[in-house]
Length: 313
Ligand code: CDP
Image (cartoon, rainbow, N blue to C red; front, top):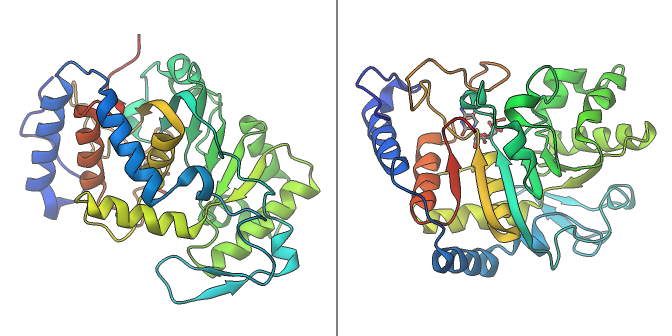
């Protein structure tokens, strides 16, 4: 129900604005949700014509031949595709001509703690997770285990796996819980991330891990940023979560969101929340999360996707 005035936002300078977003969200969420087929189709049509994630979200050997150039996101810098780099690209686009029924996009918010949403999440046909969020250790009941696609920001390899310069087995063992899902690497935001991503792919190959690494296409990322800006979002960089929601909106007829709540208090009983369901590390890059959340809430109200902020039955 209602959030009172005691809510403390994470970014104090924006506190007024954030309180407004929260109040509005709680009010909108209290209204009965109904899917609106017209709005879904309209948004999908626009996303497909501007961004075309089903054919462009991932770098493939078809789209990016040897000697072509890859542009880093938002930078003038380019990278020439060598035969070695090319050999790490997937052959065909994994989503071409695909339409799925129900997809769950799992954000990493602390709101998932004790939500009992694991089963509901796992019942989706396609489950997308972010940044190699941990699944075992008692989290399963609340976040589920099924994974069809998981993202990995290469900075994780530095933070958790010594940049894959030392022993690499712990990394491969942690990948086990994601089975043979796609591992989506945003390798072309900075050159340091390309090197780390290639190292991760070589590790996966050398240890014969079943996970299927693919690169997020920087052109797709760029087009998404322009698209959401044209819809009123003022941002210089999209979060992993919004990028995955955008992909799901093209790929799936029904899009359900869990773990999206970038505020420090629970919307229902106002208890304190950690930033992630597995730790309380605050975001390094502040992605204007409340603005993104406001956008997601708007899409929820329009019946385009369904946000889940409460506990599951
Ligand atoms: O890489 P990034 O910082 O964007 O992501 P993360 O912290 O690993 O979380 C994955 C995604 O979950 C974020 O990009 C957000 O969209 C969402 N999230 C949220 O809505 N609320 C939170 N408290 C934490 C994450």
